[in-house]
Image (cartoon, rainbow, N blue to C red; front, side, top):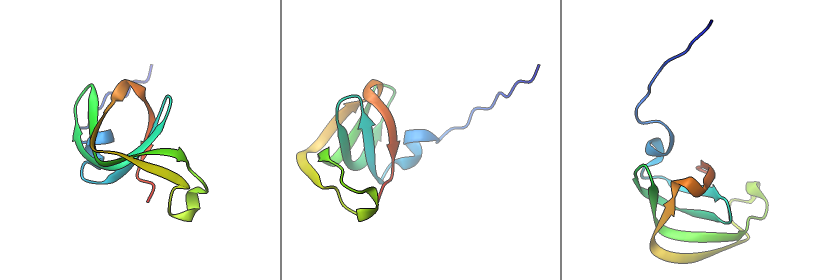
Length: 85
């Protein structure tokens, strides 16, 4: 039997603190500066909801509208996340 047991701190969302991230969630996509992370929520500043992505290589969203100066998003709704631009 093979087993790999390794715990690495500072991985995942924590490693992206201070960066502009895009969250691909169950119903909507969000983008903003990741300024907070805990077990249940993330906090975005300059938060936008993305209604239409357009081409990912274009360098900008086709339709992204500002939601709030700060927006909390439940981690349970996040399917994927990345620094896109």
